Amino acid sequence: MSILTTIRIQIQKFESRKKRKLFFQQLKTFRKLNNSDKRLTVKDSDLYPFYDDATKETSFDTHYIYHPAWATRIIKKINPIKHIDISSSLHFCTTLSAFIPTEFYDYRPAKLTLSGLYCDSADLTNLFFDSNSIESISCMHTIEHIGLGRYGDPIDPMGDLKSIRELQRVVKKNGNLLFVTPVGKPKVQFNGQRIYSYELINNLFDDFNLKEFSLVLDSGEFIQNADPNIVQNQLYGCGCFWYVKK
Image (cartoon, rainbow, N blue to C red):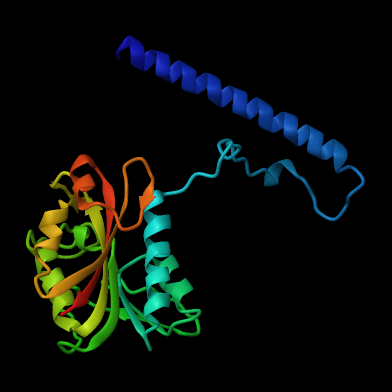
């Protein structure tokens, strides 16, 4: 073990002791102030400590906060009769279903029961929808996983390309596809995900017009209508593509 690693471990232990000490100080203060309030018990057996949440700012996963927010705004603008989502965030489809009838499909179906939301299973490499039939569809932060086996799907190095072709097939003329995937320096990080260049993705969509490209940078900044040239400087950006079928 290196000296640097040893120092890091000692620092972590020190920080942990500080946080525990603060926790019990706060508990003592709370009990003292709560002495006359008999509404709720404060037993040692019920302690449920969180040591790391007292931060100056609220942290969040920039990819998974920005891309559903981006997509929701676009769908509100499109205002389709129905929206179909393939394997994106459950937070997205459940929220969207509050104001747009939504169908959600996943290789591992989600057992959700909400008004305005229908859930079922689907294989993205072989969708059951008719060709040229869907007005509004999204597939976000999903393609990069297909064929890597992470979610129990078959190993298939071409799984992502098959899935993209299926998405293209089912969209009707003038229909909308919201497509999100990691972008930056192209690579496979088996079995977690793939990362694509902007060109690798956009060159696959000959039959579509790119209406908008937005991007979450490595820094966490969200840029609407981003310059695609920025992508080559990212390691793990979040590329948000709004395509309309020609």
